[in-house]
Length: 268
Ligand code: FPP
Picture 1 (cartoon, rainbow, N blue to C red):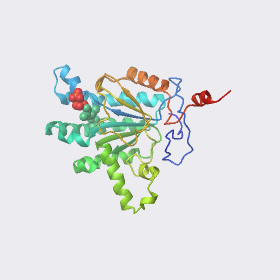
Picture 2: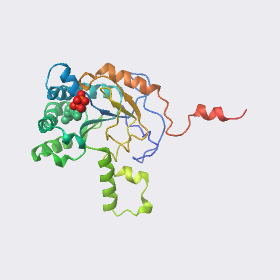
Picture 3: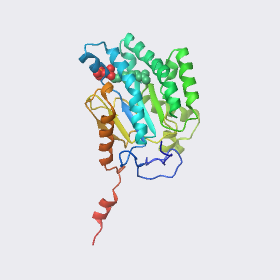
Picture 4: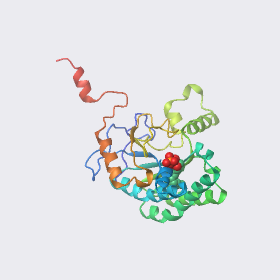
C-alpha cells in the first residue's frame, strides 16, 4: 500500500501541501488517481441477459466488489467510493429495495474480516438512519472495527445523493452559525460527507450510460470521467487496468494551463 500523498484537488480540503501530480503506481508505472469513485451500473441487464431475476445481478455485483477493491489497492489508489444505493433508488419496487438492503448486510458479513485483514478502512456515506436499526448497528460496528486501518479507504454510498449531500452541508453551515461572508468553497466542502477526503480524480460508470446520476456532484467538479460498456458484475481486473491507463493519458488542467501550453504563449 502506498504512503499518504497530498491532495491533487485545486481546493485543498485536508490542509496538506498541494500538488498537481498523482502518485506513481508501482504496477502500471504511470500516474494513478488518488480517489476513484464508481457508479456500479448494469446489474439488472447482466441478470436479464442470463434469464435471471434482477436481484441475482445485484448479488453478482456485490460479489464483484472484492476483486475491484483488491485491484485498485494493488495500483495504489487510496480512496474508493462506490455508489450502492441512491436517494432516488427508494422509488424502485419494494422487493428490489429490500434485496439491496439485505445485500449491504451480506456484503458486511462476507467481507468484513477480509477488509480488516487487508487494512481497509470502511466508511459509509449517505443516510444510514434509513436502514433498519439492527443493520445500522452492524454497519456502525464494522466502521468502528476498521477505523484505525491505514490502507485503502472504502466508502460505500447508501441512500446517497449529490444534491442531498450539498443540502446537508448547507444545513450544517447554518447550524454552526457561520456568517454568510465567511462561507467559502473550502468551508462548504469540509461540511460535505466527503469533508476529510480529497475530491475524486476519476469517476467510472459501467454499463454504457453517459450520466452522473446525482453522484458526488460537488466533488466531481474536476474529476476525469470514464465510461465503459461492461456491466458491473463483469467489470474486472482488465477493465480496471484499461481505465487507469486511460486516466494516465488524460491531461488534467483544473481550468488552468499545462506548463507546455504556457511555454507556447512565450514570445521568443
Ligand atoms: C445499478 O444497476 C445498480 C444499483 C442500483 C445498485 C448497485 C448495487 C450493487 C452493486 C450491490 C449492492 C452493494 C452493496 C455493498 C450494498 P441497475 O439495477 O440499474 O442495472 P440496469 O441499469 O442494468 O437495470
